[in-house]
View 1 (cartoon, rainbow, N blue to C red):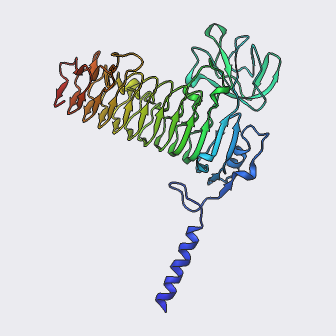
View 2 (spheres, rainbow, N blue to C red):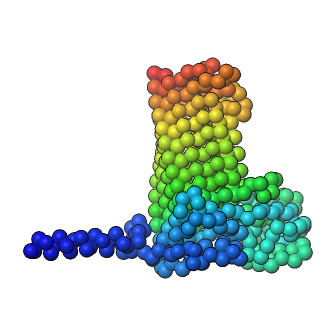
View 3 (cartoon, rainbow, N blue to C red):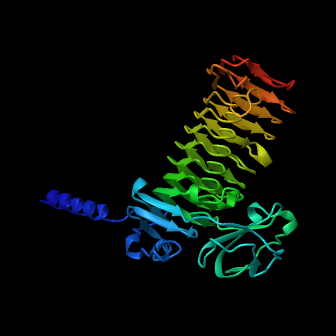
Length: 425
């Protein structure tokens, strides 16, 4: 009898636990599930999705977005404990048509209004970004349009920098579809983000702070099964923070990089992703990225390198393994100006498509202490473009290039460093 009672108690507990909503990583107890359909508003700048996100309590919750197309005029902003979960490819966040205008007068820092040459396409409640050729990246002002009158746009926050006509100052209504800054235990899952490039200004500038997914200084963040297509900037950018996973995602035909880890990001994982036909790199390392793993991804047909920028501005102790890098415009994998990074078990085939003979399958420029081993580099085109399997150039030295399988190129390995070790290739 006691055994029967205990068994029934355990079964009842199991059923109760099965009905509970998911728990955020590191949190204790269940979180509410918010049905975003209850908050849908076609007149909202976020289709009502921001209201659904804000409806979660302090512990966060799962915001479940049903199938449908959700136009965005400004970013969805996540906070700690929020999981934004779509219903797979049927959930589409789509950027509204874009607009760009040159400024009609210099915009000083702290200005609450900007003078523009044209206001067409800028609407109250929509995002606006200010930049010039010098004030880019972190120095762009991201704001929301407060009011519009002929030749003038009022902002919901002051300009963060000076934007000058002699530096080509512009206003553009580009923005991240989803962003978070300094948050923890958040997730973005199972949805599509479409940039609708056919309705975006072709000559508007791109920048990493305008990525479709833009996470800044976040920890314990997960981006899973997200497709970004045709975004007018990077696809998925992770700047700073740690313990971030980008898994099973896709970035196609973006105007920037497909994936962009940068700004001191540490201890992150990019795995099982696909970056195809982007205008810059498939994945771009940028600025003091340390101890991250880029593995089992496919980077193909990108205008720049499959993996680019590895080593720039202090990238160190990173590993690129088991990636497929094919038919890219530059290198399959590009090391430059760095040290102590690793490429192992990658396949780099038919790269340097934009400039035959200029880029190798794995290109190492001005690097030290790097390990390049166990990779396969080849070119099987009728007119080979990838003229070297592995090439060391510039001030590179003290690298190890070993046990790579290299064929189909005019030269297997080219080295310049007197202390670089080459063998078994």
